[in-house]
Each structure stands twice: as structure tokens, then as C-alpha cells.
Length: 259
Image 1 (cartoon, rainbow, N blue to C red):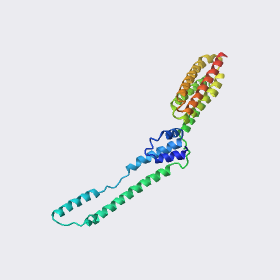
Image 2: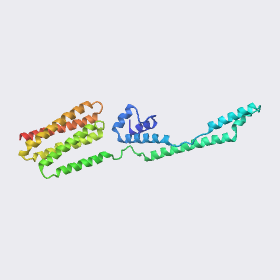
Image 3: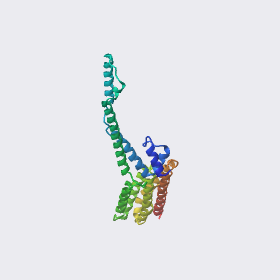
Image 4: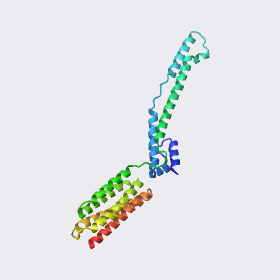
């Protein structure tokens, strides 16, 4: 199903916050339809808050019944048209006016929500770009450190943090793919490149610990990928990418230690 079908089904759903399973699967992969669902839920929560003018029809009807009872006790015949006195007609008019006012207010809320929705099924920029910019900034700062040893240590710490955050994104395959690509770039490119420039006397004390951490990262990523393979294949593929990058990074570091 495409985005247009999903959004129409959400609009027709009795409870858009609890869509069927096939719609939930699409929402998990589509930020645009998730935004549509959030706005639709917000609109439905606002409609019950509209004020509706109170009606006095019940009270007037009971008063007329009491009045008719008193007239019957006095043996006064009452014509059926007495129930259509001008006050009753006025009350019916007020009820129609109240209904029209409520309908107009509901349409106003719907029109405002429709105007605020995106016209295209393309999601607006989200926080992932901001996170990416922050990571790029930290990477650049790590590469600008004066000593090679400090650069290696900072890159290894950054890789550890990215791996830790990636483990929390199993349910968000799009962001997980982004973080796995950044992790691969740090480990396979920058970390290994800086490690090759490390003086031989520092390699044993620095690279051995980093190699062990990469081995742990590979094991953890492989375990998570196996667990979510059936339910989230895209997330599993991103985790496999992290595992492969960790494995290759550990192997390259072990080669430098032996050299």
C-alpha cells in the first residue's frame, strides 16, 4: 500500500491511534504517514473540546405537560396544536442554530488541521539531520587533536558511543541505517588510518584495548541482528553492517599489533 491509501484508511479509521497491523508496518517505515497520524489524532482530541450551547427543550416540554394536566383537571379541552406554540418553535430554531454552530466550528478545526498538513507525502526534515551534524562536528574535532594517540582514543570513544546509541534504534530502521553508516566510516576509515600512524611503542597499550572493544561490539551487533531478523529485516541489515565493520576493524588492529 502506498502513502495515499494508508492516509485515507487512517482518516476513515474509528481509532487512528490503534490502526491495523498492516498499517502499523507501513507507519514504522514511513515518517510522512506517522506525521499524518499524529496530526489526525491531535485533531480528534480537539473536536470534543468545542463548546456546544445548552438546550432547554426538555424543561419546556415538562412544563407543558404539567400545564396540560392542570387544564384537564379543570375540564378544559386542549387542542393538539397547543404543543406547537411559538415558544416551542423558537426552541426548535435554537436547537438548529446550535447544531449549525457546532458543525461550523468542527469544520473550522478540520480546515485548520488540513491546512497545516503537508501537501506531499514527503516528510519534512527531522531531528536526524541535526544529530548527523553533531556527530560530524565531533568527528572533525577528534581529527583536529594534535597527537595521534589522542586522536585514536577519541575516535574509539566516539565509535563506542555510536554503537551504544544504535542498539536503542532497532525499532527505527531508517535512523539505525544512518548510524550504522557513520559507525562504519569512523571505524573502517578514520580509526584504522590514525592507528597506522601510531608510534610502535604506543600500539600495544592503546590498540589492544580498542581491539577488544571492537570484538565486543561485533558480538553484540550480531546477536541483535539475529533477534530482529524476522520482525525488522532493515534493522538487522544495519546491525550486520556494524558487526562487519567491527570485525574488520579488530582484524586490522591485530595486524598492526603483530607488525
